[in-house]
Image (tube, rainbow, N blue to C red; front, side, top):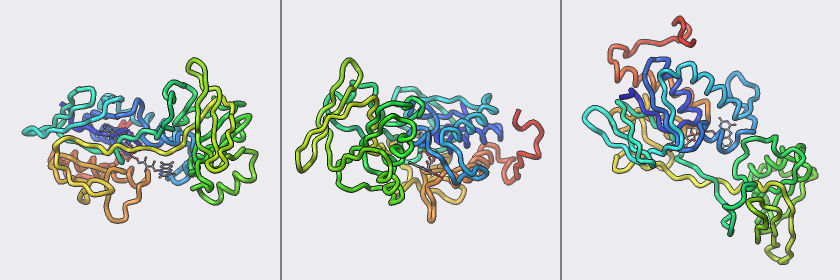
Length: 328
Ligand SMILES: Cc1cc2nc3c(=O)[nH]c(=O)nc-3n(C[C@H](O)[C@H](O)[C@H](O)COP(=O)(O)OP(=O)(O)OC[C@H]3O[C@@H](n4cnc5c(N)ncnc54)[C@H](O)[C@@H]3O)c2cc1C
């Protein structure tokens, strides 16, 4: 049986697993998505982050790769399971039993919830045959595939405009199609877009998807008022309609929660003895839902869990720099 099961492999869950390894605690790290990295890998892997300590700028996926590299230094303590969504937690006498959507069972002495806002999946266009086409993308993992390609982006929020502005210098052509007559994005981005060569189609709705085999060749869009129909040829359609989040539900377990997250005390204990939470999964007064605060919560919660499992270690300050061969 493991010491901790960590639910959710976003940046906070990954770093918590590494830190648990530093403290020689054994870990199950469980992630519902097919890959680790949380929002950074799923929603904005190619975007630049400017507010991480020590990095004046770093690509989101590069930061996850660095966390993964650090995690690997403690891999003897950590088992990682992707494509496993935890759907129930049962408290036994002195351990927990967790069950996933695939009916796999995990056992551990404690649990750390780093499940953010829950399992997210991109909002689809909601149009017939959408699922057939492999060149409709809901997240951008590798920007290089867009080199010299003809791209259409659907959406009018910050993310859609950010991608249009990034891809305009890479792709041969970029169209942006928005269902409203105004963007819901930063003014600066709108100004940049208006000065760019990106073709903008405002107040248009997607009418039809046309393709062959599993390749989408073009979309037909219709103006909401004039009813004008335009056909846009494309190599890739990027759908940027935001995400639907399925709030984590752990069966009958009565975890105290409020609208913006689990309720925890100052050492990140939930109302259930042995279950802890940190990162975007929790809320407290002034809590910013950002990466750095979530990472900062990790040493507090992991050292607290260490003290729970091994009471003799309680209150001992752990300096990684003072321990030889802490990281091989
Ligand atoms: C577009 C965008 C840009 C951003 N830019 C910045 C920025 O510049 N700087 C910054 O600090 N922050 C930024 N953020 C916020 C930042 O991404 C979050 O604060 C951070 O991802 C929180 O990390 P986390 O590990 O707590 O949760 P998440 O990254 O949300 O990871 C939670 C993980 O848990 C998994 N999970 C949930 N429920 C279950 C379950 N039941 N079973 C198994 N797995 C489960 C999810 O699939 C997910 O992978 C941005 C967010 C977005 C959307």
